[in-house]
Image (cartoon, rainbow, N blue to C red; front, side, top):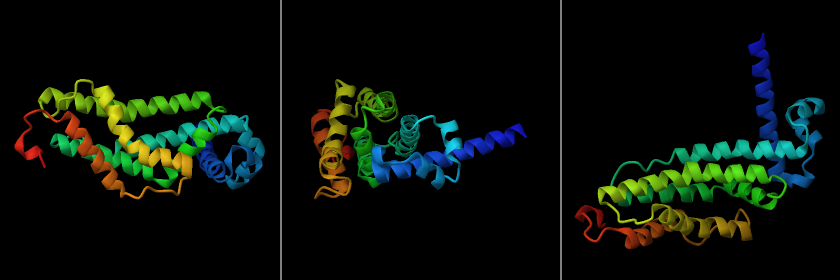
Length: 213
C-alpha cells in the first residue's frame, strides 16, 4: 500500500512538472497561473501546493527537472572513439543540434529572462552543464593530446573556444532574435566550420595522413 501511495505521488508530481513546463514556456512566469496548472495536471490546487508551496518553488523545480532532460540529450552524443577530427566533429554536431532544438532554445530563453527569480536553480543548471558537457570534452581533448592526435596546451580553454563557435550563431542569435530565428548556414555546416577552425589551431605539427581530410 505504501509503495502504491508513493508511486501515485510521484506520478502526480511528474504530471504537475510537465504541465508547469508547458504553462511557463507558453505564458512566461508572470502569466502562468497555479490554478491553471493544477487543472491541466488534473489535481486540486491544494494538492499542487502540497507538492510545490509557491509558484517560484514550482518554477525552480521545473527548471531543474528540465535540466535533467538536457543532460540526457547531451549524454547521448558519443565522441569517445575514432580519429581526433571525427571525435571533435561528433561533439560539435551534437552540441549544435542541441542548441538548435526549439525546445532547448525556448527553455534557455526562459531561464535567461527569469534568472533573478531562481538564482540557485540557474547556478545548478550551469554547474550541470559544466560537468556533463564541458568536462567530458576537456577529458577527450586531454586524452587526444596525450595520444599525439592533437596539440592542446590548455584543454579547458580550448573547450570554451570550441563551444563558443557553436554558441555564438545558435544561442546568441536566439537570445536576441527569438527561438524561431535560425542562422543562414546549415547546422552541420556551423559545426563543421568550427571543427576546421579548431583543428587548424590545435592539430599536431605532423598529423597522421589519414587525419588530414
